[in-house]
Image 1: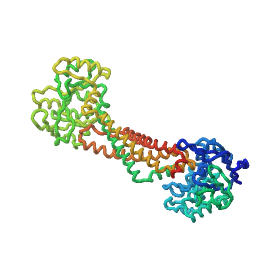
Image 2: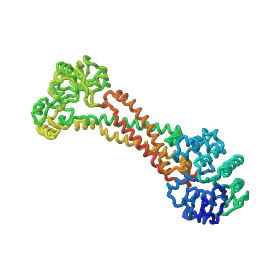
Image 3: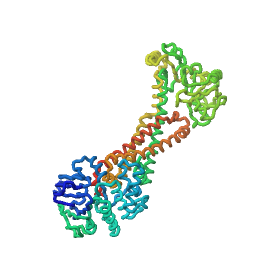
Image 4: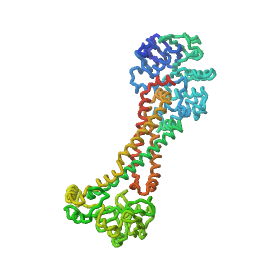
Length: 247
Length: 383
């Protein structure tokens, strides 16, 4: 159950309380997120929508431990990440977060297999165990046959599938998707969304996704709208976003 | 190592740039090694000089001579074990390009003073008994394919009208010090003195004396110079190493020149490689940010950048050192004895490798620290 009023149960997988984020730009302080509360349970699929500059990506960065809030706390599976040191946070990310980016961000000089294997290099798994995990992840995304292809030899949709395999290969606690279909045509976007839905439905993954596309957002269990740094719960439907950003 | 694939894949990302950077390393390392070898050649004489030997020259300069009669006076000084004397011969073998040092020696005392230059006894006896005899270094014999029994003509114009002096090769000496000089040609004092104009007969170029103990060096040197002070030919006595160093300095401040060129090579290489690494890291800002996002630590990112620059440095360095191993003997031979023997020692090769590793690490350090400190959020925004 997803809640934004700060009254969620204490054992929510992700618990955000009183989150503020301000940036300083040219001497001016910009409040990007304010007093934000959020509770996400395991297996939830949340979409964040909102106009450009509304703080969607900032929220994702904070949830993923890539940035630190000005005030407030984020607790994931019982670990409060807001007080962690930079190195602890890096270790935490490796264990708990899978990132899927709009531009796939694969390493062009590595094959699909090698790209997916990257997060496992940080573990103590043996080479053969790593191979098994990578092959499984690539099978899940339907690219087992292309594991030796380089990113330049794959289509955009296939690249994003490899990126998804990289995000799930270490079985993270939750996945953060930043515009996962933003660089794809409608058909490929639909295939990617089917895959993400499968990760939630079949593998019980918890996914938080930022998108501008109401059709993509409609595939999530819940759509939350961010406007002027405030989080508003929306209905589970392909409602137009509050302002701008419609695909 | 499980990260090696990532490091090497990144390394070969821009093959032309990689080849050019490795090429600059190879050329720089070759130059560095060559300069170190040349410096070593000039300083070797000083390093190998006997600590218990003094050299006496005419106070006004090495080209001026001294009376042979000084020998007995010098020998009488307390602490002097043996004295020998030498002259510069300056002959030409076939062509002026075939330069090698030729010394007129005193056969009776040469072996007592220059003990490191070993000649088999039977060859030495033949030499002593042969007025036209000659002894040459093993390196010189090898250079011209000479063997004992050969007849060697040297043209000479320094002592009267140009004439050809004929010599019988009676012996070949070897230097017991590795890398020591084996390029000299020795001829007998008596044969030389008989065949030079009367006005310069009985005049020698310099004395070399062996002491009972190196501790006597200062006292004996002072006694010699004081003893001949205010005479028609005053002397200047110094240790053999000081003499060798002074001789090398006559060619200019070789060490300063070599260090300056070496310094320029070092900084140029540092800038070239540093710039290459900076561009390479900048091009991969997004990828490095992704690595950090998925859990690679700041230190891992620094390690990747340093490992890349180190691999470039090692490959380039090894190629440069390999070139030096191949080329230095060829260059040494082509110089025809104009420089002291060029000896590429294991210590020079090790120094070259240390130099390569140092430049590799130093050039990767700044870009690596930049990548390490890069904020993931900022870098991802640029992708």
